[in-house]
Length: 143
Image (cartoon, rainbow, N blue to C red; front, side):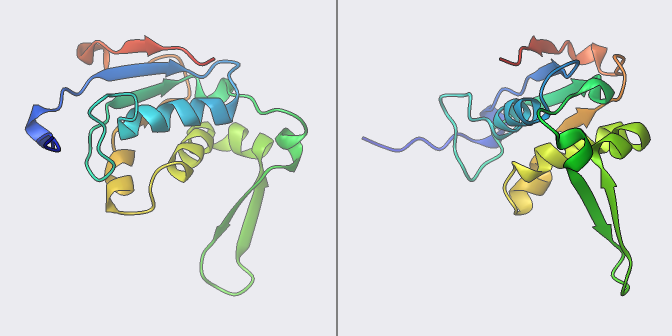
């Protein structure tokens, strides 16, 4: 039996929208990363871009479980000594709500050129509106 390697031009790319309102951050990120990689398709190939496009709306309404709202920290460092900055989940949601969801999704993608390319296929918006209505995105539910 021959192994089938689908060509990039043969892959059908669809658009999906995920509503993150009152959804757990990790579950939103898992669903988005799975669709971005293309693992939901029977012709999934790990070294090719097979996935679809994902739009995440209501990123500011995403929630976390337990005490993570006050204990989960986000760090960034400029490279200079003593320049490590940290913020809690609550502070990040107040200042940059899209970054929280993007950070979680990026962490679930491969750490390679493929992962960087796949990350360009996700669009995250803080509110319920997005400019991708022309692509006719299908809603994706989070269990």
